Amino acid sequence: MSGHSKWSTIKRKKGAADAKRSKMFSKIVKEISVAVKEGGPDPEANPRLRLAMNNAKGVNMPKDNVERAISKADKEGDNFEEITFEGYAPNGIAVYVDCLSDNRNRTISNVRAIFSKYGGNLGKNGSLSFLFETKGIFTVLKNDDINLDDFELEIIDSGAEDIEIEDDIITITTAKEDFGNVQKKLDELNVEVENAGLQRIPNDTKALDVDAALRVMKMIDAFEDDDDVQNVYHNLELTDEVAAAME
Image (tube, rainbow, N blue to C red):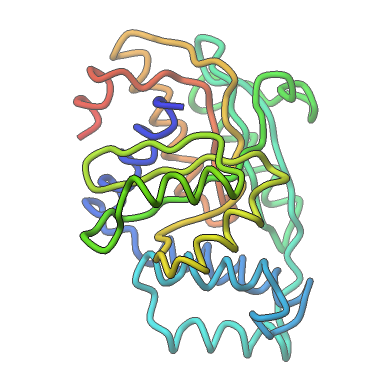
């Protein structure tokens, strides 16, 4: 899972450097809206909303913004539709694009245009299912309050498949069905989670030279900049050379 962990780190650093806070806030507001529509405005009774609120905290979204988003969604929230796209970037790099949209035609048009602009092609849904597996991913900031030996034992007992520590970031990977158990254990341990969710993790990654990899990453960035896009997943191997060129 080291490739995924490195991508998490790069995204975190890049997000801070680019100051894309408003974009992150917008994505979280959409997730809150969908969560409230799906399970109501009480986070104690709505795991999806609780998760969205936790992720809002992880990007320092003001509490007032979160409460306003919940109230609006409960009273008059927009009807967002979850739409997934699958396709390929240049050099056969597989790309998943997850969207929340209030206008399906606009979203389809925008996604198709990005694939086309950057030399990729949109495929049929289900065509990439064998290349990715859905996993639970938790990102925790390491601090002096965490005894790593005890922490790892507790988390593994709760169902974690893998724990990686890189600099000040602890990345925990779980099977999809164990996501809730690990989330509950982290709550019990009073461990502050910076980000958590189900993500599509590639079974294998594909390495490209730096120039080709950067062209793929331009496509990924274009997707992430689109207002309807919530998450983008790919199987490009982010080597140290590519990571350095992205900074």
